[in-house]
Image (cartoon, rainbow, N blue to C red):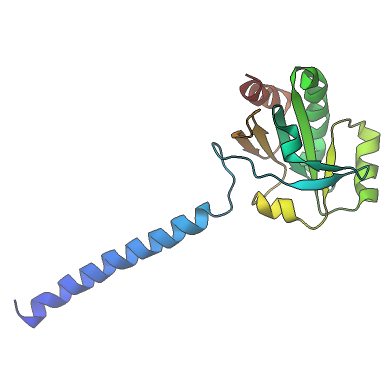
Length: 173
């Protein structure tokens, strides 16, 4: 083989290696930190609105709807009545709805929670540590976690009563 015929082969091999490298880096980056369906829900500890600490592991054996939200988020505001309604309907069957407020003060969160009559636990992620742990982007984002601590479903965006109920049915089995 002469020098001219080897150049295209070398370029092709380098191209294939470059594509493989880019794919490996992308795959590694895209998966890192993302909590998805089938994963164990990462444990954490945060203070509730009343100051009491709560760990996710404290809820082992119960179905958990973990909802990340903020008071300035209109879709979050819109889904809160449905979350409260479904919590009231299913809490005696083992469902715990946990709201994780992202980066707001207790005063602001309380001014949001009280008029809406929310009775489920509200946790304060003032430093966004748990938000980063779960790799939360758009809000609201909700995780449906079964009694064994496994993420069964994830919803990014606003939910309504029907969506919540269908997802809760999966984790209350």
